[in-house]
Image: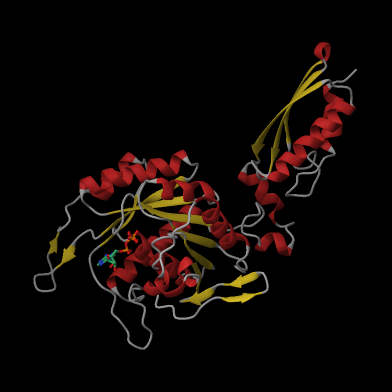
Length: 352
Ligand SMILES: Nc1ncnc2c1ncn2[C@@H]1O[C@H](COP(=O)(O)OP(=O)(O)OP(=O)(O)O)[C@@H](O)[C@H]1O
C-alpha cells in the first residue's frame, strides 16, 4: 500500500534539474499527502527555477515514479526554493552555470529601468547607474532593451561593434561596463520593425549568446511607456528589480505609477524611484528653480510603496572631445556624484 514514506523515498531520489542534487538533499519536498483509499498522491515540490522546460521534465518523472510505487493519480505543484537555500548551493555551480545569466546558480542581480513615458531620462539613468556601479568596483553589464528606440551606444560614445566569435557575441566594453544594444545590429540607424517571436529571439540572444562573463549587475534599459511593447519585454526578461524614472511633475508621476503597476503585475519588484530633471540650479544666483514642478518623485514612491533613490537636477555632462560620451557624467561632476550615491544605495539595497 502506497504511503508517505514510500513517496518521500522515490521522489527524494530525483534530482533538482538546476542544482543537480537529489530533492531529498535540497529541501525540495515541501509536502506530501496520500489518500490510500483513492490511491491518490499530491506533492508540493520546490526547485531552483520554475516555469521552465526542466520543470516539465521533472514533472513527468515524478508522475512516473509515484505511479510505479502504486498510485493511480498524482497531483503536483511547484514552487521556487527560497533565496537562502539557493545561496547554499551557489558554491557548487560549474563554471558554465556561474556564467550563464539565466541559471539560478548565477549570482547576477538584474535591475531594469522603466518609465511611464519617453524622454524622461530613462536611458541616461541606465547608462550613468551602470557606469557608477562599475566605478564602485562592480562587474556590470548593460542591455539596451529599448529595442525600437535604442540610444545607448550613442549616449556612451561607443564607436566599436561587438565581435562575433562563432555563435558567441563579445559585448563592447565602455567605462568598465559591458554593453549590448540593438543599435549594434541594424545598419545605418534603420528602424526595427518586427515584433512577437523575433523580438523574443533577439532578447533571448542578448541573454544567452552574449559572452557576459561573471557579472554582479545586469542593467536593462526598458522601452518607455505602458503599451504592448513594454509589456512584451517585461514578460520576456527574467525577474528583475525595477527602478522607475519620472520627472517631478505630479502628472508625470501619475503616468509613471502605471509603469510601476505593470512591473508588479509581471512579477518584477520595485527597487525605488529616481526623479530626473528635478530642478535647475542657476549658476548666477545659485538658486534652485523647479522648472518641471515638484514632488513627483515622492508621490510616485508613496504610490509604489518604495523610496526615492535620488533626485537629479538638469545639467549636461562636461564633454570631452578626446573621449566623447555625450551622456556620461564624470565622477567629479556634481551630477556624477549624485549617481555615485544612487549606485551606493542600490548596492546597499541589493546587498552585493
Ligand atoms: N538631468 C538631465 N539634464 C539635462 N538633460 C537631460 C537630463 N536627463 C536626460 N536629459 C536629456 O533628455 C533627453 C532624453 O533623455 P533619455 O534619452 O535618457 O530619455 P528616455 O526616457 O530614455 O527617452 P526614450 O525612452 O524616449 O528613449 C536626452 O537628450 C538627454 O540627454
